Image (cartoon, rainbow, N blue to C red; front, side, top):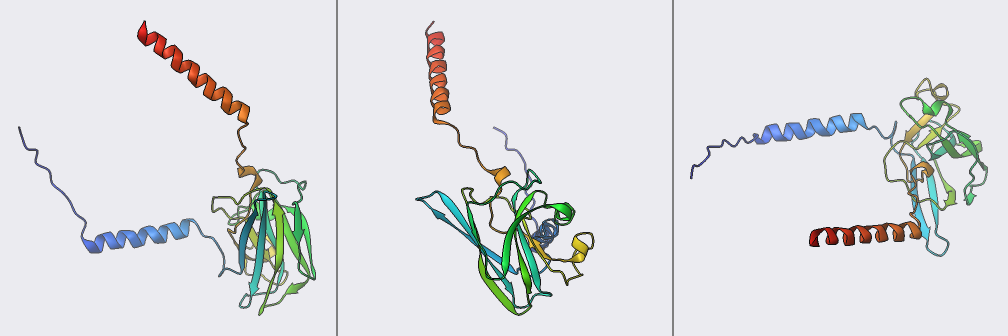
Amino acid sequence: MKNSNRRCWHYPFWLARLLCIVSLVAFANAFPLSANAAMLSGSVSFDSNTSLYTYSYTLDNTSGPAAIKEFSVLFDSSQATISTPPHSYMTPAGWSFGQAVSGSSADSPLNEFGAFWQWYANQALPTGSTMSGFSFTTSFAPVTDSANNYFLWSNSYTDGPPLIGGGGIVEWGHIVAPNFSAAVVPVPATLWLFGSGLLGLIGVARRKVLKA
């Protein structure tokens, strides 16, 4: 019995560490999540009695670059039409709730095509302030990907992406939210029964062939 001669190459520790750092930097540049430090935070809760999800958000503008006039959450990336209201929603005092389509937010770097639920203020939330009480309820679970799905807009900010809202986009990125186009459609019980029955028939037929 012959022994095969094999050479094992090992990366030096410093080279492996360098490759790891380069990979992390490349990943961060390839998937930017936000233009600034996160000003929007969110959470979701599920009610097993109603089978509904409630998404809640807080704006933290304590150190933001400008007053926030509006923020929008993408809920359907498959169509740019206004047609689907949430099951229910809440707004803080001085804010209103509505729907919008992607418009310029479909352009790079946001790349947010679709329909949005949005809150907009009669008087923008000034720098140095925080506000909670933004929420909506729907039957759709949170999306599992990390694509951009929200943005914050200011009517007094000019340092955002120049082709999007005249530079008024203060922040964008990914936040906990549903996406109707990514929802998993449940398979009807009758189809499961049909499939299992079909597999059973195939198994019986195969056994008959083997016995023949």
